[in-house]
Length: 401
Image 1: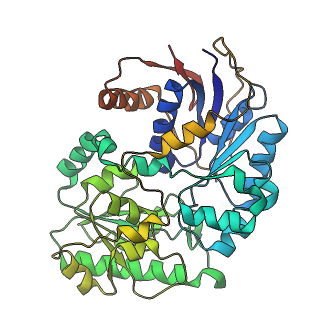
Image 2 (image 1 turned 60 degrees about the vertical axis):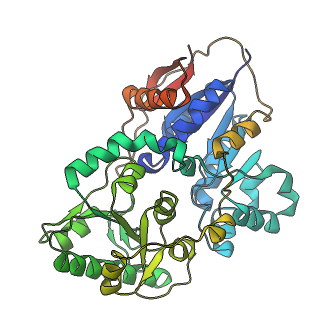
């Protein structure tokens, strides 16, 4: 059978890996081979190997333009699903993450929902035929069918931490990896960080027997939380593994304006948005959540039943019964005109890409991929095995045996 190649780069493992493995699994069975792993290494590989489809994850305008231009100039087709396309302020989004010059080089642009589609097409009507509402495989993982992927991991977290409250933060613009960065443009983020620290301290004091786990954004300095909260024995600062098992295991999820709040909502969890003051940012996660302006209100909400606002969510995310984003995306990938081949590819190797210290580096093992695929085989009752071939450190070639 003729096959096509997809380059599937990953930047933030904890956020992206499982969703991209889900997409890769079904794409392999649909007739694609996949090169998946560390993003800079993937782009270097794409310079000397088979022409194919580069699946881009979006990014701020300078980074996005460089990466898309790179793939375009080497003769690849580019498709894009912006990881930040779910929650955004339209004017800033178009200025920073969806500029026309880069969009013109994209073959297919995938949208989380109608809101993102309308924003892009409203600004660039000439690009309408390349923009599609698909959803995101990240949310596929939250559907009843795939929740069992995380059952074992979630049970282990419950065994280890008990009945815990999970607090997710998003303050990397202020609490950067290199330290605090003050700016007049994001003064509200600084204030939210300060208010969350106060809230966590008060919550820990008033509920001394309640375990509280703070999960900072990947771009945040975790040491700042350790410094502020180290005196509270019931507070733990942890950022390990995929988010979904933590959401599944949590008694309640507290956030402000986080996509994780929507993910927890889709998992039918009690979700509390701590809103000590109003901001002008995208408010969907807060609207879907039970809102609290004080710690006393947070504590009261822990005792109350939670609400549902599905109608509000539908405009921002494609939700249909018995459908998944990966099926929509794969059907579109099948229409991309790129080189097909019959024989198994021979991938050119090269020395490991050296990285600046400030760049995120993650590890990815064959066993991690194999275990995830094994669980999917059990869910779909498949017996055929996907071959996982290591190309170089943290990058793998996936194909049918």
